[in-house]
Image 1 (cartoon, rainbow over the protein chains, first blue to last red):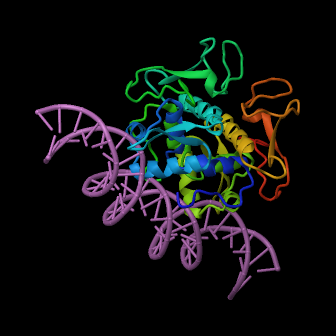
Image 2 (tube, rainbow over the protein chains, first blue to last red):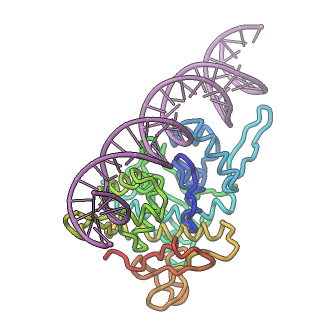
Image 3 (cartoon, rainbow over the protein chains, first blue to last red):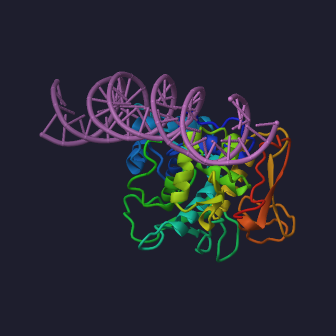
Length: 163
Length: 163
DNA sequence: CCGACTCGGTTGCTTGATGCAACCTTATGT
DNA sequence: ACATAAGGTTGCATCAAGCAACCGAGTCGG
């Protein structure tokens, strides 16, 4: 992307995409949501170029979607955590996941199933528990591998969000 | 974007973003959903470069998200319509819209309100009518200007989808 | 004590996507 | 005859993404 803005668009979709619409950004958020918190983990899991990852993380921190916290000193090492604003992207991710599931042909079923932590019921693409009917948020759900997946690469979404 | 794929990602979010994650793509879908169907209309409304718009439209047609139909011959002129697969992006757009509304400071309120056609109730970011509780789809809703907006640029989402 | 490895980046270079303006074709308006 | 419209295509300049090498602080193995 040349510029990451969409000038002249008075629309919250455009505003949202200015922030999270760059290549890799939503996948980074997904991975952090799934418990990947460190630079190396994210880099290896995504296969993204290191400089690009560094620049995306910086932007996400600037936009208050991620928070960068040291987990040790000397050498200083950092982890990235989702803020409330970042966790709040969960419905959008679930909606995209649902669309992808419905329209991408996978031989062995969807690679990820989202379930309601409390009751174990499946979660719809609207982020609603199909078992108990509650409208869920990131912390209420977690992801399980669904079909034939490489466990190395499986993001277990929202398994341990935010801390 | 260099390549528009995310190699090695066994995840429907990644699959979805491979198709609709390129710059401009979701905004094009939003505009077509709002009734903009012609090349010139889309180009002017979005301010996107013409060659980029042409390439996005081609890809969206290839991916069966848009359908290109002639509306006159000699000279041949075309309009773009959403397929079912394209209309099915509505929940994701609504979720992004909601996130943008919640986290983008607008002085005069959200620039767009989505309402349920049938009962006129406001629609949540999960695509659910807050008045009657129904889980909605693209055709069930339409968008109204919400705050201080330039009417020239206001996409009236899903006002007349698909035909 | 020396070398190899880890982690979290940064730097430099190359490739390719995006932005922009000009042009093309068919046709209508005046 | 000339301008305008629609729906693109072409060429060129610029900027972002991919890739590999490097760096600095520290730890581990021998």
